[in-house]
Image 1 (cartoon, rainbow, N blue to C red):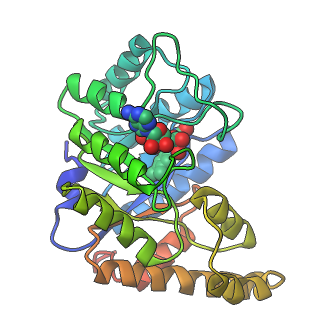
Image 2: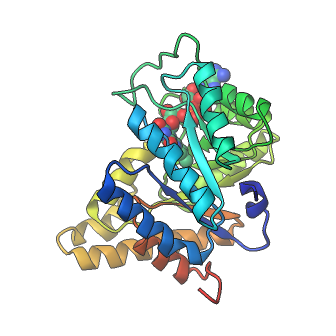
Length: 294
Ligand SMILES: Cc1cc2nc3c(=O)[nH]c(=O)nc-3n(C[C@H](O)[C@H](O)[C@H](O)COP(=O)(O)OP(=O)(O)OC[C@H]3O[C@@H](n4cnc5c(N)ncnc54)[C@H](O)[C@@H]3O)c2cc1C
């Protein structure tokens, strides 16, 4: 099984795709249509997020197992420490291995119900992603990714502390980091510089969301944890009432951002797809990231 890190060490920049587990049969059909539409474009890997509840968690395991057995894609499963004892985490990691998934994005996760609430670990569980990285590593030959935050994690005291704990995740055995959403290439590049200045040469990948609707813009602002630059709002907000014009301008914005990141040598662009494929396909084609035959 090819590992994510092997794919990231390829000669040219790549792209990867993130999905969430389907909630019902209709969702599942949308997810699988998107997977089949993106598969010929040869993404470096595809990942499925890990939810807070039982059925969503089963959905992650079921979907990633299907990706591993029925597609040509390199699968990566997300895993969080939320409401899990260490014994349960070992069990999930064992399931991933059993279905052929050797790439895991190891996350602490958010407190259920309130992402900004106080984190309360499971009594027999873990407190930080760093510990989950070490656990996954101790259980076998896994390639492990972690999350990174260009503006700092919302609960971090300051950027220095944030960087210190990010670097500890790499020292614990993480192979690469995927960045939360951000607005300007410089915001990601400063994160990369901070990690390098701390003496760590781990690969960092920018997270990107195609801005197809005002909703995707608001989601980007919410997840990034930072206010959007006025320059971006001036470009997009006047088009909020014109779906076609907003989408065209939004995809221009994202393509320009990606071009700048590629020029700065990023190995991969990680697309948050919302289980749709059209906008991601358009952007990666414009960037020339797809094989000539596709
Ligand atoms: C690419 C990406 C994918 C994601 N996928 C999912 C998903 O599938 N499911 C999901 O529920 N959530 C997901 N998230 C959200 C993530 O779980 C939350 O942002 C969560 O709040 C932080 O997780 P973490 O792994 O970064 O935590 P950590 O790295 O543990 O950090 C959490 C906080 O604790 C601090 N910290 C870390 N280590 C220490 C320490 N040793 N001592 C003191 N403080 C410390 C950090 O600075 C930070 O403020 C994703 C986020 C990203 C960027």
